[in-house]
Length: 93
Image (cartoon, rainbow, N blue to C red; front, side, top):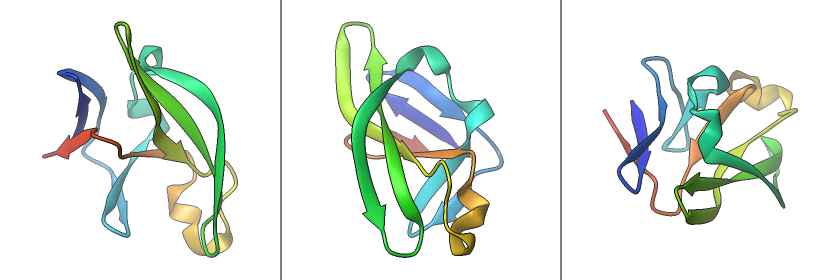
């Protein structure tokens, strides 16, 4: 699977985890130069507290377009150290 935004590959992996229709990429598969920390956090009742990254390609910033669970609840343990995408990031085979 590949995650692409503005024609740039953000992550690529043959070993994603699919949860609720979202592909979670292993953290070691992301291109770190395209990720900037965000102060955004949300809470999922069964996964835990999500943290976000802004996706940055050139001069363009897609705020909160990537999320991850630093300490997921036990039920979502398989997505520890994984990152998922939304907000126009295309995830394709």
